[in-house]
Amino acid sequence: MVGNGHSEPPIKVTDWIAAFLAAQGVTHVYELVGGMITHLIDSLHRRGEIQIVSVRHEQAAAFAADAAGRITGVPGVAMATSGPGATNLLTGIGSCYFDSAPAVFITGQVNRHEQRGDRSIRQLGFQETDIVAMARPVTKATYAVDRPEDVPVAMEQAFTIATTGRPGPVLVDIPMDVQGSDVARAVPPRPSRTRAANAGDEAVQAALRTLSDAERPLILVGNGVRAAGTAELLRSFVDRVGVPVVNTLLAVDVMPYEHPLRIGLIGSYGNRWANQAIGHSDALLVLGSRLDIRQTGADVDAFKGERTIVHVDTEAGELNNRVPGCVAVESDLSPFLERALAALGPAAPSRRAQWLAELGELRTASPDTDELPDVAGINPNRFMHELSRASGSAGTYVADVGQHQQWAAQSLELGAHQRFLTSGGMGAMGYALPAALGAALATPGRPVVVIAGDGSFQLNIQELQTLVHLDLPVKLVVLNNRCHGMVRQFQETYFSGRYQSTLWGYSAPAFGRVAEAYGIPGATVEHPEDVPAALEGLWASPTGPFLLEVMIDTTANAYPKMAFGRPITEMEPFATPVGMEGT
Image (cartoon, rainbow, N blue to C red; front, side, top):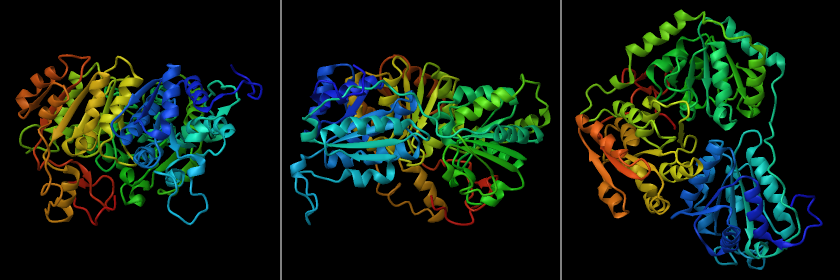
């Protein structure tokens, strides 16, 4: 029943929460059971509207909620018990915060009479931990609920805050005795998304004039386009203005691979021709990108150059932050793009044929598959192209963190309806497998492809059991170079090839045998000529899980890579860094 709440018959707090979550459009809640959330689990179970997904580690619950929130726009929900359960969520909470994923985390806390309060002691109740203080720096808001009547207010505000402006996570901590109490309040309907700021017509017109007046304009799209749910609007805008597009790591899926105006990935490991496109441009419209160091490089003066940069972002603090001198437009991307489309006339034939031809020549001169010309065995960039062509039915690719992440971002051929998820700002190894669970449950019937490295895959390998238990169509591709490759490459550049802890002292299991132990079929491929057959095996049963281990040369580097301290156009291995990178 919907109303103002004060005439409602009392119900148990956790029964109210279960009804509230269902009313907000939540379909799955991710958790690992613990004493302080048993009331919540029981209420969700008895109501029966929301599927309870039991993972094997709380970090996995957080990453699954991250993916669900990114794909659906409805905050992903994860729960954990007090103490270690709650603290195990923190990496995933931080990932949501840095990558603008809407999520609500509910933690159980010890009973109010078991809390230390103002006593000069470390802990009173068993597993009592101040998770609210720990999570505050990586959340949009936190709530330490102390009274039953405050639970509905906290939950309603949590869902509004998680989706308002730049999305992100909110944490609500509820003592166990509060969970078991009664509350009298109606369950509100799902609110509409609130926009943070709207661009004025003058700002929109100025941005359009910048593109129109330029001879070599570019549009740089970042994760804000996806966070705002404006990918389709962006594509319509691009088609109307006829301006080529480059993307950041978290916006790999915004423009389809085959779109004639899609240029490619920019940044630390960007496609060489895309970084060169930035260098050759005379105007840049930045939509929803923070312009952080992995996108611009350390030489921000060279990135800015003489070009006009119009920077549109919903968060004022990101404007003229690292790259000063931009034309700042504080606005949610939805109203900005809507006003821009309304101000534009019908699509006209492109008058920038020479600029597009120049970009095509840059791409032809330095294809991604030629960055490792002497690599032994399987070329990872070439493999990504082959994987893409074999995986047309996939709805989402989820990449873990490492060299494989960059090879995927450089070379995957994504269709218009395919998503690409990865941990960007947090850069959390172990993200892909649990995030794939959230992605698969958020897109029923659409297979998900995990792309992981041997090192990152081991961080949450226990979630293979969750995958089997749920029988989800997740295809696991593990690129095994027998080392922590990205840091090994860093050691090659800066530590004279002393590979401690990346190659020396590191090992990995036989992943096919591990998969077999979980009841997942698998195969290993070592030679380029065997890749087509291996990919046929990967998709032989489209609706079931499969693990394909792809052996990659240990010495293979992720190239090109921006030479730290130099302009974005100067990339390894042809340019050398002038200092040690700090990120």
